[in-house]
Image (cartoon, rainbow, N blue to C red; front, top):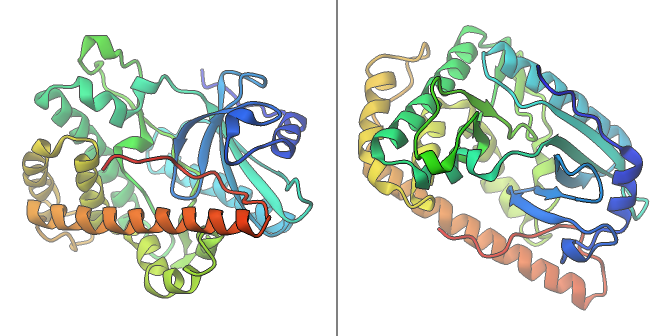
Length: 325
C-alpha cells in the first residue's frame, strides 16, 4: 500500500525561520544534507519526521506563484503516472519566506535508503548487472516518450532520466545483484516540465532565481530555452543519461549502451522518427561541455555568496560542496 505523505506546516515554518543556509547543521532546528540539485537541496531533520526527506526550493516571489507551482507539480506527476511511470509519493507545500518576502516550497518524500538510489547502487554492480539497470531505465524512457508521441500537441512531459533520479525497490548493496523483478521508482519530480497544447506550463525563468545577478541575462539569452527543451527530446535525454556515467566513474559502460540505445531507437523508432545515431565521442564531448558549464556556474554562485556577505546581506541559497566529476 502506498504511503500517504503528511507534512507538518508549523514545523516547516519554524525550520525555515531558523535555517542557516551556509551551515544547515547549525540551524535552530539542525538539518543534514542528503543531496543537491541544480536549484534545490534535499534535507533531513531528525527533530521533525525522521522518515521524510525535504527538498527545498527557495525561488518564489509571491504566494500566488508558489501555489501555481504546487498545482503544476500535481498535474505533472499525474501525467507521469498516466505514462506508466512509478512515481514516488510526495507532498509539495509552500510557506511564507522567513524574511516576509515571497514564498519557499518544500517537497516532502519518504527518505530512501541511500544505496537504493540508482547512481549509488551502481558501484556495487558488475558490468552485466549495471547494463541490466541501464536497460531498465531505457524501458522507462521508452514509456515516457511513446506517451509524448501519442499525445503530441495535447500533453507532453519533459523528463530527466539520470540514474540519480531513480530508486531501486528492494536493493541490498551487500548482495551486489539487482532484485527480481526489477522495479524502478522515479522521485525527482520537483521540476514539473509539462506542455499542454504545445505550450510550456512552467515559467522556466523560475530556474534563474538562484543564479548570480551578473549571469541572469546571459543564462536567459543563451541557455534557458535549450536546457528546458532538451528534456522533451529523447535523444538528448539519452545522451545526458550516458554522459553522467563519467561522473559516476563507469565510462566503460558507455560503448555498449550507445549500441543498445541506437538499436532500440535509431533503428527501431520511437514513434517520432527523430532519433539519429549516438556515438561515444558525442557523449564524451557533451559531458566535457556540461561539466565545464556547471563548474563555471557553481563558481559564480560561490562568488555571489561572498558578495552578499561583504554587503552584509543574507544569502538564501544552500550551495553544494565539491562535486567529483
